[in-house]
Structure formats: structure tokens, C-alpha cells
Length: 295
Image (cartoon, rainbow, N blue to C red; front, side, top):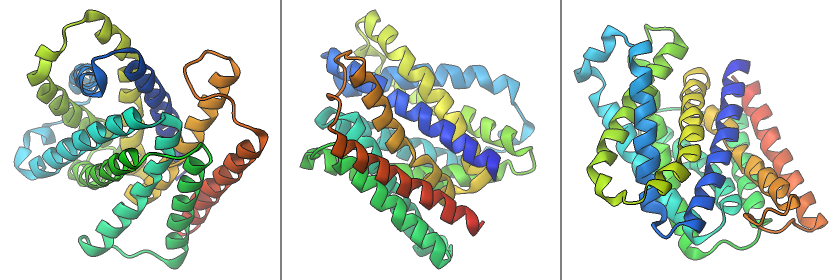
């Protein structure tokens, strides 16, 4: 369990860094979120293809056993990513990122209604606390526009379905060591995403945009690797709760950069707002602790 939590926290940190780097790109280049999305996932796809020979297993040839999970994970993930970039375009990364914790509710709902999962009351309490903490974190940063909220809901839905597909994709390789199964799933899923994005390569007209997108792509690839390993260890709901710590991490990164006066984030918040964010972060920590008690 400890290993899974560490992987989840690693995913949260790397995702937060990648969100911030993506927000900087979108604010500086006229090409916008869609072009950045394509560039990032072509680069991620290259990394995934390079990883594939090192974790190859004959089970990968049994495509009939996992094609639906693979296609579902890739397609809904790309939909979620596009929605996320649009949300960041209409708001600020430090306000959008905490709201992604709402994905936990969608995952839990799908698990109960479609997959026959059951959760104890303490687990439901942990999910509820995680959601409250996410909303509180986002609200403490200021108002989020209606357009951004709409894109956040779309993001959470896409991510939730993708997370469930990821879990079943990893389960197909369950005869392998857990970490190897997770990494093989990463390589297969994001090779497919990268290949699909190549269809839009004509949008890539400025080499400097590719260079500027590379830091976000590298951190995102390693974030995905940690995320798959976290889901393999903890499952989708508990893993999602741990991952929701990215909200406070995003805000702490924003505060750090604002204090350095680099001019790429919101100004440093007043003391009252800072205390609210610390309190909300404590709720997220409590949610992780509550859910871990029942595991």
C-alpha cells in the first residue's frame, strides 16, 4: 500500500508541474491548447514506443483480450486531456487542478452502477471529504468561470472512464509482475495516443513550439507512469483520492513561483486565503488516511 501511495503522490506532483508548464505555453503561444495537446502526446508517444522493447511480453500479442480496454483508455483519456486544456484556457491551472478531484465521484458512481462495486461507509466518507477539499481548494483561489467548470466536468468524466479502462487493461497482464504490467500498459496506451496525434502533424508549423512543449511532455509521461503503477497497487478509487493531492501541490507551486516574482502565475495570496488552502489540504490528507484504514 505504501508503494502505491508514493506512486500516487509522485503522479500528483508531476501532473501539477506539467499543468503549470502547459498553462505557461498556452499563455505565450497563439497556437493554443489543441496544438499543445498534439505536440505533447506525439512526444509522449515517442517515449512510450522507446519504453516498449524494454518491458515487452508475449501477452501483448493477445490483442483480442484487451483491445476494448486499450481503445477505451486511450480515447476517453484524449477527450479528458482536450477538455482539461480548454479548462485551463478559460481559467488558471491552480484553480482548475483541484476541481479534478471531482473525478472520484464519477469513478465511484460508475463502479457501483455498472461494475457492481461496493464501498464501506468510511470509504464513502473519504470520497466525500476528498471532493469537499477539492472544491474548497479551488474556491480559495478565486471564482472559476462557467465555461471552465463545464470543461472541468467533461475532463472528470473522460478521466474517470479512462481510469477504469486502465485498471482492466493492467488486469489483463496480471500474470506479470505488477509494475511490469503497469509499464506495459503505459507503453501500449500512449503509443496509440501518439500515433493518433500524428494525423494532425500539419498543425505543427513552428519548431519553437515543439521545443517549448517538451518539458510538459516529459513530466506528463513520468506522471502517467506513476499513475498506472498507483492504480495497479491501490485500485482506481483509492488511487484517485491519493492523486487528488495534486490540487494542493498545484497551489503550492503557484505560491512558490509567485513569491519569486517570475510573473507567470497569480500574485501571492493573502494570509487568510493561504490558511484556507492549508485547511483544505488537510482535508485531502484526512481522506487518504480514512480510505487507507479500510484497505
